[in-house]
Image (cartoon, rainbow, N blue to C red; front, side):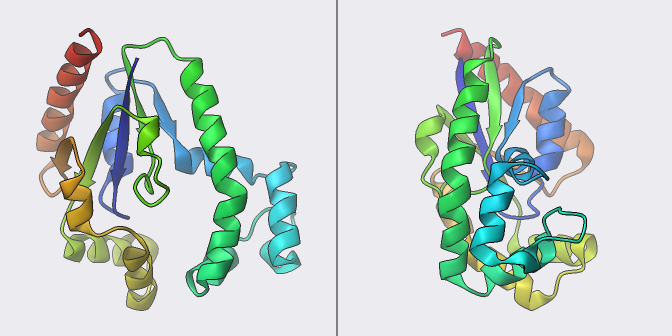
Length: 198
């Protein structure tokens, strides 16, 4: 089975493109979804996070306070590495487990930090979703109401746009209309189906 690693900078439109692939009945494995599930109430990883960062990252209902945790890790690289050392092996193994259950011609593995985690070995091809940095900033301000300081911190913590473009096997420019985007996805879908049969 052909494994496509879908990645891109924050707010480049990875979720939008992923949903378009789903319309072609392509199985999607999403590292962010896995990470979210790993830290739900009752999961061992949530207890580990509480031990690492203290009760301040746990809400009164026992769930993870993502806002506080995000503030902690984006202001301190060592704290960020602590969280990654805990979660990344669990996410990596879950991706492998989910892939092993699939029987489709190809699948999309959405890994926002594909290059940063050095997980390219998990996939056969890399699909980068791209847009200008100014567009990322604008989307984040509108979507999440983030300050420019936080946005710049997040963007600078990721590999550069030029690095992603240089390491892409396939590219979708997400600055066009939804119709154009859907057509781009359809072309790639046909390409991947063909390649999976080679």
